[in-house]
Image 1 (cartoon, rainbow, N blue to C red):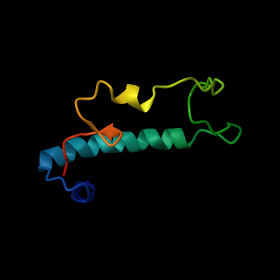
Image 2 (cartoon, helix red, strand yellow):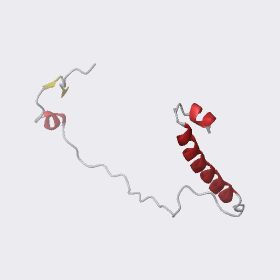
Image 3 (cartoon, helix red, strand yellow):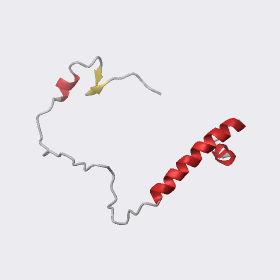
Length: 87
């Protein structure tokens, strides 16, 4: 557990090492149980439930003209918005 703490750049007391070491051991035991399950006939999935995207057709619609888009701008110049300089 000291090695894992070192890799994670954690300074742990001996009591914390014992406490977290026990938790890590339980996690690793659980992973071993999961690894023992035969999944050879199970298809790989990205989600636990089936997800279906809903697509719509692309449709062009009228949009604002440049003058309309800039009409409420606090500042406009050369056909674009004037914004504060950000460095």
